Image: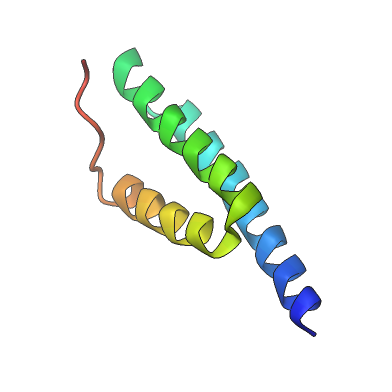
Length: 75
């Protein structure tokens, strides 16, 4: 049962990561902002390999920021 829940969470996080990558690619923002968002996505992807629940939480935060138009500063 636990394994089934873990697989379901993994599938959900993977699908949401795909969506997040697509959204970041489609944004009309300066390249520096896009790179910062891409780095955040890489952090979430790496976290998913070690702590899936933490990755899901990080992804929730990132998606909320995207939804609300909060982007990192352009360096």
